[in-house]
Image (cartoon, rainbow, N blue to C red):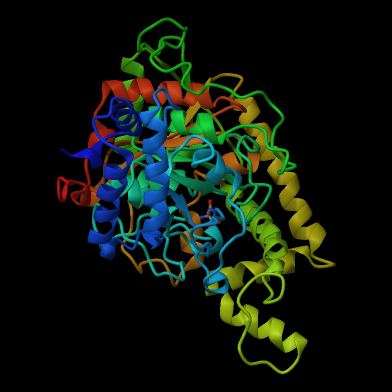
Length: 500
Ligand code: GLN
């Protein structure tokens, strides 16, 4: 039986029907994880705890009707703090850190919530800064479609875990594309909800006004099921939206006008001309355009829209995100948080050495940019200006949504590059984020789902962007597409390995 190729929906059904136990599933996935260390997907395992959680789930399942996700395995990005696994956020400065509590998302999904079983923590770029998962202190993680290529970042480990059949689902976070980009590059589905939908409590902060957690899985339906648990008000996060819980599966299998069926008649898909310009490689363009053709075939109407400030999203984001990061990362000083340098002369020297030794190059680069743009004399010229343009970017989306219901375009300009190709050229790496940054700057929901293959037979994702709180609509469109096409079913060579 190829259990590792199943969706969480299928696994949940099999668990409830007692066709397999949660302990059997956990063992199967833990074996798969330890059989592929070359992917470097997992950074911490605690098999005893995983089995304890699976045993608990089996006991609950034996009692009868249980929450849908009871006993289904999940992997958590190492940015969520966990009581039973180390949390490093991909940084040396948090070596061996164990949190006294679980992040909100971890708790909601786990034993005291929906009953998912945690398989372990997965690799990520250091403090979620990166687009390739190469800045991790645990080393680069590798793409299961081609081990010489990057999985995308920063939630690289999460995308690998799903694409290689090491976990049926994973959590991720997205500050400027970190759920969508690795999902696209590894051929899986992932959604970044509206800012404030998912609590950031216990999620190590990168850029607080942009950070948002979301699910990564094989299908839009799986993402909807997980988001049902992850989203919701949490008093412990002051930016958590005080809105009633929503059922993100409610539109699945319905036509755009609300009847049963898959027709997208009535749906207006906006195509921003800035997302299909010169920077987009022809292989990615082809795959994305074929998905758009499919939408049309299903009845959708495509309308040209414009997001004129798209190009400015890179300088604006790379001012605002480092500014917030420089402030958020000040707590890692060897006293409040973080590994302390072993040798030092005095207090100031201790701070300097602890931070110099503990942070990697990309993090240091961003702290320096951040403190610079916030410093007296430069604040108005950089930070304030960036905030003003951020507002215009958000307004541009509102203008576009006057003539369309959702926006579609590419996730990244190219398919996954080779490991090591871009590490020495950070500005080149930042350009990879051109299509993903604006939704974060505006706080909008956006997702990626597989829509074909590009050069070197690497996966390509299409991005769908919605207006505020349009998650259920995005997932509805994606689900209809996935019922009509098979791209999301394509298996990476690593997923095909070992039909355990
Ligand atoms: N690549 C972007 C950055 O490095 C986005 C990362 C993210 O979404 N966490 O900041």
